[in-house]
Amino acid sequence: GENVEQHPSTLSVQEGDSAVIKCTYSDSASNYFPWYKQELGKRPQLIIDIRSNVGEKKDQRIAVTLNKTAKHFSLHITETQPEDSAVYFCAANNFNKFYFGSGTKLNVKP
Amino acid sequence: DTGVSQDPRHKITKRGQNVTFRCDPISEHNRLYWYRQTLGQGPEFLTYFQNEAQLEKSRLLSDRFSAERPKGSFSTLEIQRTEQGDSAMYLCASSLAGSVGTGELFFGEGSRLTVL
Image 1: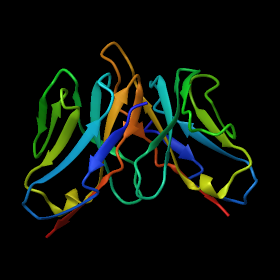
Image 2: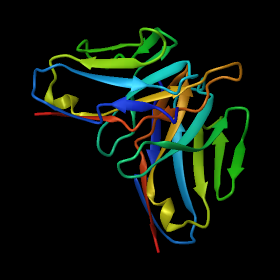
Image 3: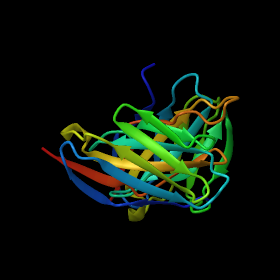
């Protein structure tokens, strides 16, 4: 099966700074890469996704980049706000199954 | 229909007992997934269905775990002879897969299992 690695495991930034979270995957057949945000005690929710035929996608303060050759993808959050504090998970879809990274706990300090 | 619902939200059981969790996906979604999440980890794939067919089950999944989706709507996940290592959050998710490929995964709130 697919193996997704995510880092860093924790990230602390000052409000207004940017945050970057990186993931790598092992199987070149993976073709869809969503990012989920999970607040404490709540369900994971999709914040942005990218398909393998696209290199970059942006939605307001959030962007995702994909490098298929290197098999890595990254989440970029600009102008961070305290409400961005949560755990973020990357995932790779491989033959209809989603494999998740171990998560990054983002703390945005006011 | 406001989303994926799971029942019960919390279950405390003694080692050796059987437990069953239920998931009701978003009504038009044809795919249903079960994941397990432990503290500080990402969701771990257990099994998934397309309509009523169970298409894949994780190789790491013990034979004590079984899942069904009898009419292609709700699903149940049963754990027999529970062990303390089964303590985790069990997440259900659904998606609509179509001609453009895999759709967004929508998660339920989860069923938290504690095995004493």
